[in-house]
Length: 343
Image (cartoon, rainbow, N blue to C red; front, side, top):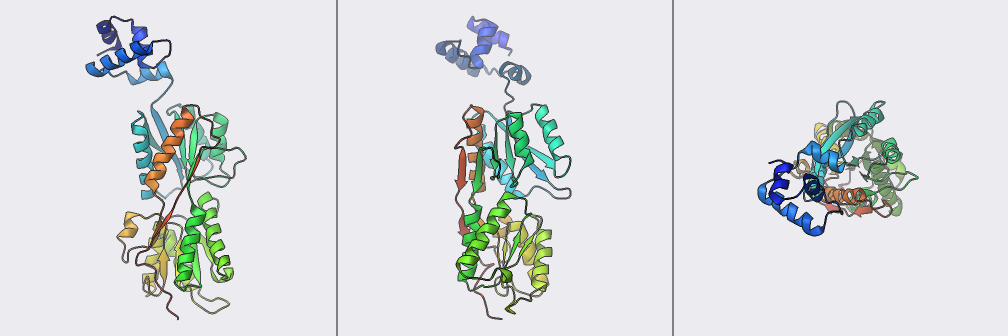
C-alpha cells in the first residue's frame, strides 16, 4: 500500500497524511491519531528512503569500536550490543556495529562513516584517556554517548562501570586470602578503564601496606594469548626483594585470565592452589573454565540499555550536562582463587 492509497481511504491529502505520520505539530492531535490508527490497521509501512528524506532520521545508531589488526571483538562487546539493541527497539531504532582500525586510518574511517549520515547517533566503546574520536564527534555535533570516561576538557555523556572500585575490591579479596605478591596483568595504558583499574589495584596495596615493587604490573592486549605470555613472564621472573614468589594474578579481563590459567598449568602449577587467578567480566567462558574463574560482574547488558537510554535523550535534544551513569560492580568468587599456601 502506498501513502496515496492511505490518504485516499481517509479522504485527506497526501501531504497531510505524511505530516501526520511524521508527527508534525501543524496537524491536529486528533488527525494524527486517526492517520496512525488507519496506517496500523491497513498495514502501511513508509518507504525507508522517503521516510529519511521527510524526517531527516535514519532509524539507526552505531556502536563503534576500534580493533587492532589481528584482534577481534569479544563476547563483552556482543553483550553490550545486545543491551543497546534492547534499549532502542521500543523506540523504533536499530543498533549497528561499526569496527574501526586502530592506527593512522582510524579517524579518517570514522569521518568517512559520519559523512555518510547513515545513523542518528553514535555509541563509542572502549574510550581512551585522551580520545581523538571523542574530539571528532564533538566537532561534528552528532549526538553520542561513550562507554567509558575520558579526560576531555569538554563534558560529554557517558556510561561506565566503577573500574576503580572493582579492582580495589578484587585486590582486597586476594590480600584477605593471604596473598602478598600479586601480579596485575592489565590492558594497554592508553585505555581509560586500564588506568582506573590500576588505580584501584594500587590503592588496595597501599591501604594494606604491601610493597608495590613486589606486586608488578604488566600491560598488553585484552586477549588470552597476551595473558598467557605475560603470566609466563611474571611467574618465570619470580625474584623479588623479599624472595617470595608471586602467588596470585589479577587480570583486567576474563580473556586475559584464561590465558594466565593456561600459563600456570603449562608451568606445572595448579590454578587456585599454587597461583590464584581473578578476572573481570563474568563471561560464560570463565564460568565454565576448569576451575571456574573468580571474576567481577559489571552487568554489561544493563550497561548497553543505559547507553541506549542516554543516547535517545541526547538525540531528543537534552544537554549532555549530567548525562552520566556509573554502574555498580560485584565480586563473583569461584574456585580459581584461594588461600595463599606458604612456599
